[in-house]
Length: 213
Image (cartoon, rainbow, N blue to C red; front, side, top):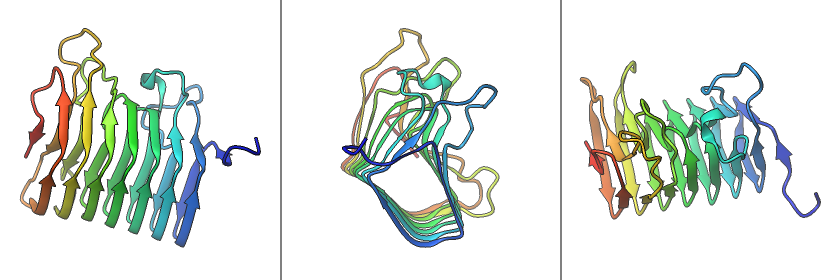
């Protein structure tokens, strides 16, 4: 389709530098036998990678319970994703063991579990994103934005969570299937340092925590 951006079923970038990608459509339905933790797109061990105006999705059938993980980031230095859309996914973005990561001005909707997960990062900016219309099922611990240190060798530092809108009006009718807003847990002995949470709008039903630290 000459009027649309290029489509790829998945994107893998490893050990690369100075790559900028704009306007791509990335995603697919899971194949038979693939689990929900299948990483549809993954970037690791890379420096100065940027994605802008991309769409990352699963099956696009409106049911995220049959989809995989949108974007896995691990051991990167200087990554940004901006002005992009995540939809129909088990989880949206997982960022781990990386430095100077920017997640800004994105739409993250129709997610079963967590929108953004941060693990053992230093220098993470989550700003101006819209997260909503999550579809958790009973037994999920769904969070719009979640941090943890479990199983890691260091904590997290230099974190900004600012100007995000978390607007969850969907309710399945089953008690215990709501979402948390911003959930920062499992500090262990490493803890969290230099964390700013500012000017976020959170509206969610059927969950205990708007912001938990």
